[in-house]
Structures are given as C-alpha cells and as structure tokens.
Image 1: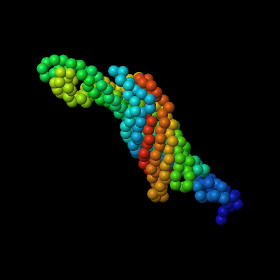
Image 2 (image 1 turned 90 degrees about the horizontal axis):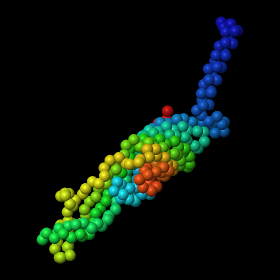
Image 3 (image 1 turned 180 degrees about the vertical axis):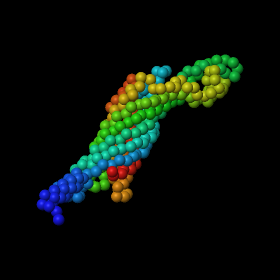
Image 4 (image 1 turned 30 degrees about the horizontal axis):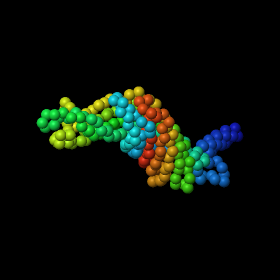
Length: 269
C-alpha cells in the first residue's frame, strides 16, 4: 500500500504528464473553445515545377550597337518550398529553386551591299538582313511570400522574388534574307555574303555584358488548393513576376517580366 507522500508524488506526476499533453495539443489546435478543432496549425514541405512566358521590358544592345526590343521567350523553373499555417486565413511560405529565363529579340534592316553581276560589273544594291539576339539567364531564386485563403479552395499570394544570376549567355546572329537581286543594267544574280558561302554570321557570342547579377521583383499569384489525401495537397498556380531591377546597363530599362504556370505538391509535416 502506497504511503501518503508516495500517493501525492504519484498524483503530481500524473498531473504533470497530463498538463504537458494538453499544452502540446494547444500548440497544434485552435485554443478558442468556440472554433476548437476546426483550423489546424501545421507546417508543409513540398516542391514545384513549371514554365514561364517571358517578355522584354525596355531595350538592350549588342556589341555592334544594334538595339533590340519586344523580345519574348519561354523558360523552365523548379524547386522546393516550405509553408507554415496560422490560426487565421493567412499562410507564410518561402520557395528556393532554379529559374531559367530567356528571350529572343529580332529586327530586320535593309543595307546597301556591293554585289557583282554575271558580266563582272559591281553595284551597290539593297539587301534585307534579319538580326536575331538570344539571351539566357540561369538564376538561383528565393521567394518569401504570404498566402490568403478564400472560399476554402482558392488563395492569393504576394511575395518578393530575389534571384542571383550564376551564368548567362548572349548571341547575335545576322542572316541574309534576300535571295536574288536585279541590277540596274537588267542582270539578275543570287545574293551572297562577302568571304563566305553561309547565309548567316555570328556577330557576338558570350556572357551578357555589364550584367546585374542580383535580380529583384514582386510576385502576384493565384492558386487552387486540392487535397488528394490526408496529408497531401496539389496546387495549380499562376503568377505574374514584375521586375524591379534591370539586367544590364547595355540598353534602356532592360528587364524581363514573366507569367508563371506551375504545379505544386505539398506534404504536411
């Protein structure tokens, strides 16, 4: 038979264990007795993959002082994410991943080029060229954000996009588009580039000059939350990323804005 002091000690231990369990539960469940056990507070980890439609803002120049505008392209991105729910409709999160950004800009120009007739005479004739510049950025990006849930199925997202460009490339190709010309004396001949049998020449190829490695922007997004199991969620998401920083001083206000389409998968910890 337990002595009184042992019985008291036993009761204290039971009360201590019970209180610890109650406190642990309070950290997870809403402690409001009116809405108890309706909103869980937990963390999620997951990943995402998607593609982005890129469009150019401003202009950029290549080494020959050729100015490009209106460029566009498609990029791929993927990464990991962490989210923490709160007892309100707000969720805090952050992503970390790879972001491939790229655009292609084009313009045509007519130049006077010296060509030789079949009879051996030389004339300066108008010839059309296509200039094409391809720019690509490989970026490690992080995005802290806030989500607001509404209608139990949808959410809006606002965040800051912070990226570091770890590699870049820029190429400028000039292609002859005119196949043949008629000379002032009535003769007709095929057009060719001086010193080569090719119809295209590469004017520049290498990293983006005067690159701003740190890229900052603002993200606005809209997503749908689909619960596929007790602990798993799938979310199709569309985001618009508005750049704040420019890419290079070789041009005027040169940046790349994008619309992202992605699929997220998250797991409750």
